[in-house]
Image (cartoon, rainbow, N blue to C red; front, side, top):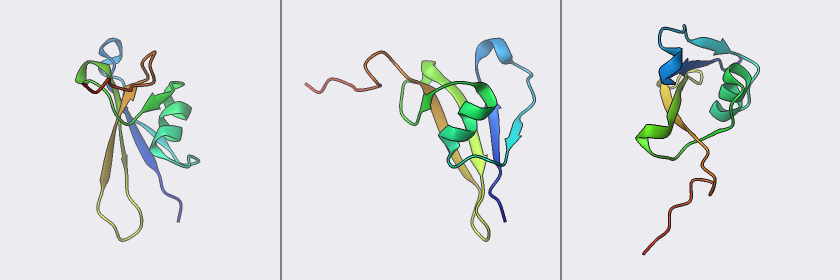
Length: 80
């Protein structure tokens, strides 16, 4: 059985856009790239939140991954 990914676009200008289901992806990031054409990462600021991706493996609970816009520094934070 294939894993299907449901990509929900959270960008402010796309409010009301229906979630897109992607079945040929290898990861939540890949599903978002195929659905939205964006290169997103799993960590970032709430202001950079662009998508939520839901998926479920057989006999497992539903999973959620939040994906954020990649920043110029690759989403790396300076540690002081």
